[in-house]
Image (cartoon, rainbow, N blue to C red; front, side, top):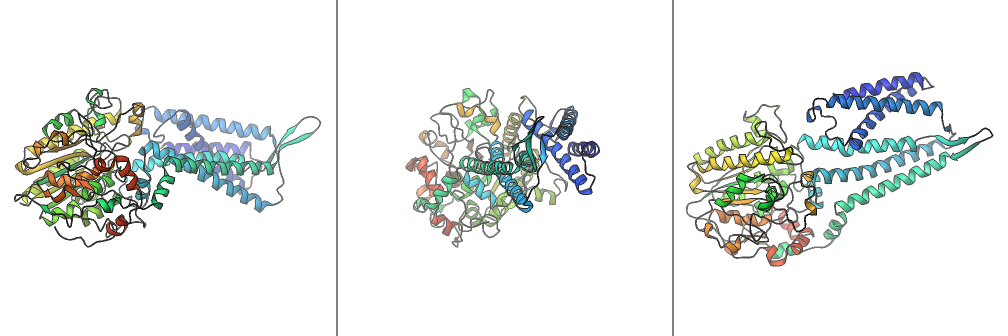
Length: 614
């Protein structure tokens, strides 16, 4: 609605421009005035709202108070009036004279080149600012992998934010540049005796080109620096044998399952951090936003990087977003940038050489399901779970097919976690009734960046939407766990709760960087592990340097699988006495090696190695 009203206001001012200012009545001039005035007024209105009033969700009335639409329309009218007065006065008291251009084709070419260079530079600058602000500290590998992966199912808010961020900002600043650079008037100074040319057109063109080149260079340099692309480039020039030298192949490692196979329920908690604890409990918040998960932690096993209290895995290369986290936990390997495009976006090409936990459990007769409220095609997860374990996938698409939700239903990334948990209960009952051991996975989404999704059922004790979303989400997880514990299958079932990666809600954590030595970690908890594991030595629970890929063998160990050598992929069974690769070689060294090109990974993991059966 606001966009439509803005266009109407722009057209009205255009008509005033044509009637009172425009000298030529040619059709071409009239069309040019209509388009120019309408576009500029709306871009200037956007600029005032975004950069002066610091407004977010500029064109979404529902995201603001009831009076917002009046404020927005009033501001658009004010911008339109000022714009009209400006062009009226400029034409009435013109400081410039129309200059005859001898080489018209060359003049047009210079304008177009300047426009393109400037627009690209602004796009690089605003795109980088938006990316860092919206997604947090994106890593180079994450950017490149996601560019080469399917984007179906992406939450619409990402596209809306991109339009209101880098797209419109680029259009605004480029339009301002064009007002200066496209002018064919020489700037003059007049007095009673003579007229002096202050800025000839040729100088104007030269200045505009210098400005365009500077913007391109500056914008690209800023983006390259912020996303560490030079470091990534140099790293990929260097090959590393680290993965090959420390890789334990699940096809050759002896895995011994217990006689009675245990069920595994693995719940990925979107962006669930220990940082949400209160400060006195080792977190960052004034109040404890995850009280139920904190209380639940005393009932199971949690691995901590701290000497005491809740901690978790340390950040590792190729693991900082949901899809990569699942790959790490399921294969014991990082998600590395492929040497060819679309290696992760093809049904036959999602890590075809790897043997994942789904492959192992399928070979052992497990019934397997994975559930998302979002579209599993995002990032290629459909391909991953189908090719590595033939999981039943219940996502946003499948929920519509089954009639769980209407065909046109879309909330946040798909359907909300309230519904996800209810459908998960139905699926768990079905899995139990098959009579087979089962492996059930699910991922929540309501705590996803940038502000999360807040259920209508959720209380709102805090002013911050994201804080409320986190508080409600952890309570729903707790209630779901309690439901599982009441089911007849729980006695022979292990539950794993783990945050998939650090939250990307950058604004929520403003000020945290200033706290020295504070290290953000994800929540992790294993409930009801196999017999004997509850008595694991305390020194294996605290002060651990471990990574998300260590969960691969740890998940299997948690259901009683004995692993020869206690390593799978490059992950280490955390229940064992063996050091992780982080503890053995050092965190920084391992991460540096994982950034580098791995020929072993390229030719054995990204290409089928005819993995065998367990």
